[in-house]
Image 1 (cartoon, protein in one colour):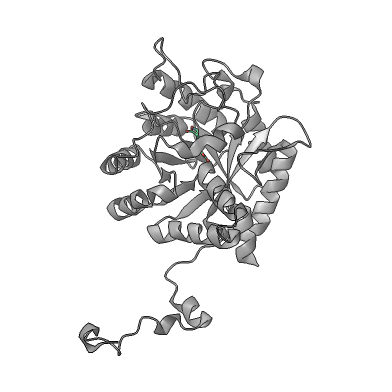
Image 2: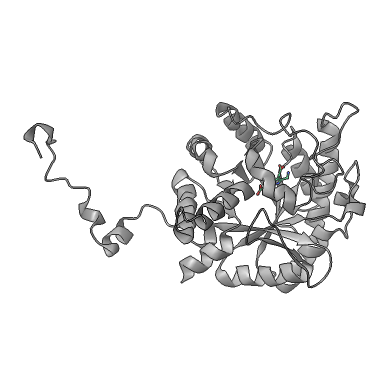
Length: 335
Ligand code: PBG
């Protein structure tokens, strides 16, 4: 090396020194990722003994309630603390107003009760939004012009939340992006005696192109007319995410979520810096599909891609990650 380019610190300071052996890299690792960091999203369908693979989400299936219970036990045994459940509601139970969301015997509630019976120690997070229950695939109620009306939707979301909590849900996760819903749901939960039922707010949820395979999984892709841009956030906005988070915290959210994950790690880091509260990220279906596709195309090693992306969430400041790779990653880490 030419003397002109030597810094004053070199050679006393060589940052490669601590990277020279595996034991030293392990000792100096700033972050660790493990099964305890994962929330595993699962798709429930009707029937028994049913497994329906989702073609746009290779390796992920919808399971009937018995299969969901089996997955719950696998997750528990791998050290995963929490599941996130999503229903594929049968077509004749979808309606304009999504009222199946309020049915105490709907697919979600049956799945929650079955898991709580068989594996009571695992946490259950439930998504609050009407899209799995509506014939139009939007998260709320529509007015005549097709606009998703806010306050009337919040009224239904309150009912949906109480229904899930009564069935045994541990974390209510409103993903609908209506204004004021966190406070309204919190007040209703308190009134109903669900003092320890948590709220994880999908606080900064973007109108993203990465949700496609999820919509296949819950059967709403073909139904959805238009987009969700008048309630989900514009990918152009960062400061606005901080306002969303501030509001949801003020309304009583116990934790907040950023979604999607990888393209929005800047938002995770800003939220963590600004509020220092539990922040979660949702590595969504399109991100999962992107990793699987790149591994299938030979562009990268699947397991390494999975673990590196999950580590990125921890480094950015996440307490945990919702990921379809949860069980696979947990088993990789557990060895
Ligand atoms: C429903 C909901 C969506 C996701 C989670 N909850 C889809 C959407 O908003 O259209 C996406 C999750 C994923 O893509 O993995 N409100």
